[in-house]
Length: 190
Image (cartoon, rainbow, N blue to C red; front, side):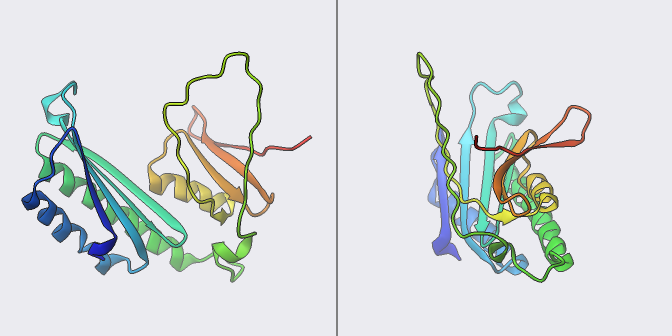
C-alpha cells in the first residue's frame, strides 16, 4: 500500500521523520478498506492564515475503484492536522462501506451500469478568452442521482458535483441550493 502513497509539501518541507509518521498512519487505512488504489497527502503551511491555529494544512485524497474520498483539516501543528484529516477520512470510509452494503438494488455495479467512457466537450466563443489558472481531470463514474448525492457528501463538496447519470445517460451537474435541497442540471445538445 505504501507504494501507492504520494506525499507532497506546499510551502513546507516534508522531512523524513514526518514522511515516516504519515506512512505509518496511512497504512492503517488498509484495515478499513482494501480497494484503495492511490493515496495522495498534501501537507502545507499557510503564512496568511487568519488564525495561528489554521496555519498547517493536511489534505488527503483516497481513490479506488468506484470512489474518491477527500478530507482536509487545519491546525497549529502539522501532526494534529494530519491526525484530524485521517480521522475524517476514516468516518467517510465507514459511510462508504455502509453504502456499499445497502447496494444499488439492481444487482449491477456502478461500472456495469453505463458505458465505459464518456467525453464532454464544451465549445464557446468569447471575444477575450478568460485565463484558466487550473485544470482538473477526473474519471466519470456512472451512478444514480442518489449515489451522486452520497458521493458529493463523501467528498465534502459543498457547491456542486459532476457525474455521469445512468438514468439520463448524460453528464449531469448536481448542486446544493441555498435552502439545503439539491438541484440537478441535465444538459441537452441541440
